[in-house]
Length: 126
Length: 309
Image (cartoon, rainbow over the protein chains, first blue to last red):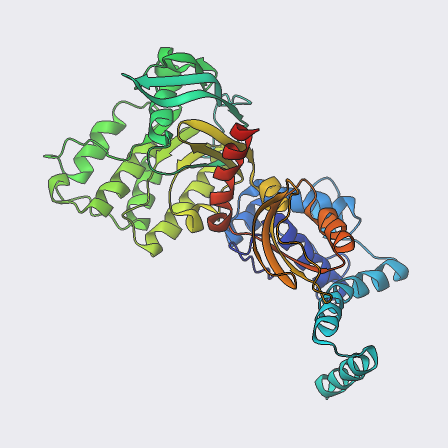
């Protein structure tokens, strides 16, 4: 599992882990049933306190993204289609909120902004 | 190989109303906090804040003027070999038998500990690139720090107290040393207290912060909690109606104009507080989390504000 932690951006490391795991689940990089590295292994890999890892794993389990099977191994849970759809939209919504703020500050009209987003979608899908 | 420590206190370091005076000078004044086991604690503070005094009190090298400090469940003034065997100390100015070679000093110190881990010693000597054949008197300051770290961890303590252990180490070795600390935590559940001014380094591994300011406790809190309660906001008002000053207690510093303002804030829930500001001042609020370097002066301010109120 490839995670990148920025130690200096002020966002708690457990949150960074949660966000990246959720993103990878939503985008299909981590398929349902995929086993996650142990707390110990991930702690060594990311040079993070094991408590940070277990906090992130615990919260992801509570949110239903991960599940603990047969006692110990932690795996990606099969997501309901509705949940998965929402999980895909959630990070996008957050990014667009930033863009929307910027559009307002710059005085770019909603019509112009939507047109720009459509053009961007088109150009990056080529 | 990986024997867990026989007994892990739930709070390996407990400080209660601790004061220390040197003559008329107050080094610590009425400090109280508890460190939960298995944490990596950043002991922060400016020069002269009382960090070294606190660590010396914790290992019984100094005695409190008032109050109490309990280390591994025992009053620090009464530590005996049962506790000392489980306590690791890395001091800012280490004292060695400097006519010895590195290897001789390691053997000498090892002979006092029943559980000295020679395999760990060998591995760390290589990892930190320390030459066992060299005489201590010839070692650079950095190499002396490495030796001091080895002497502090190879008996596999359950509480490790480190006073500025990395100031003379290069960035590569510093990164390895942080990994060594995390490894001790994973293998032995070792609680680590590390004082350092290298905030960008300690920020990578700490999960608890104790901050001293002029001998008083400014903060003792989990690092996650601090990261979530401090932020920098940029307020943008299209109508140019931001006030000249903000009287809200959560605002710690502020600069800007009626159109664009930047402020550092501290609130239990910064996200909902940001929304409140946005609707109250009809402004866009952009929030950014703070690094430990940026947060540090604000932690000190917290005590000033408390003292004023």
